[in-house]
Length: 87
Image 1 (cartoon, rainbow, N blue to C red):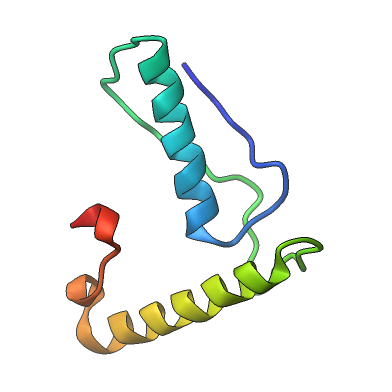
Image 2: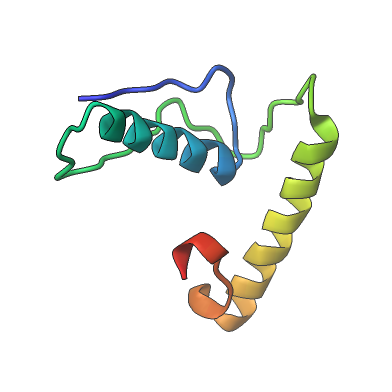
């Protein structure tokens, strides 16, 4: 079993996905057979984003992108746009 806690709160899926990829890579390095991957999110809240102290420009860009993705998906359906990694 591998676990990881993000160093700071995040509302960006890229942070969560990158943590999952890191855990999968950790399992590969140990040559562990992976048969189940689970992700748990704790202490969720709505409408209150943590203001980033570092890398705020990159975070703001991702927020704008994700807002546009949400808008497209609400108008045209969830599968109308996907990231390259999920194709």
